[in-house]
Image 1 (cartoon, one colour):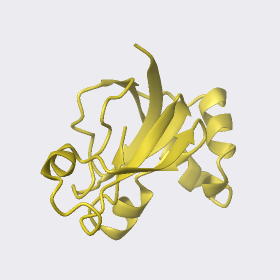
Image 2 (cartoon, helix red, strand yellow):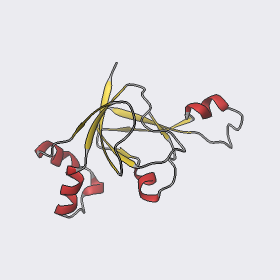
Image 3 (cartoon, one colour):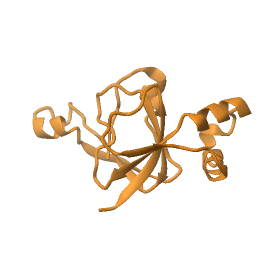
Image 4 (cartoon, one colour):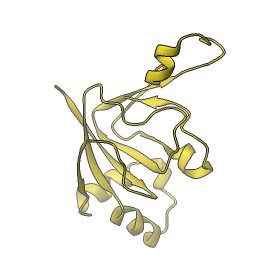
Length: 133
């Protein structure tokens, strides 16, 4: 089974069953974060706060990381591996209860190391807009 690692930052620790550990800020973490355009304009104190609040989480291949329409209090940065983004559209599949229950829908995107997800729900308080595997 392949695995991938993400770093999460959020209001609470994730309740997803996965292997996790607190991230120790070092040069490699700092370099990784500085390579992400989203963080280019952070002041040093903001950047340090971000680094100090990261948890490294390892997910197995095909493990659901977050599910569409659930509350979102965590933001994820892909450190290595890749994820698939699925969006279920009730208008296209109104009677597909199996897909709806599983949270899967149409493949909308694939993300790789250096990409991030979960930001919209964290910033707006809206439910998750997709399922990420």
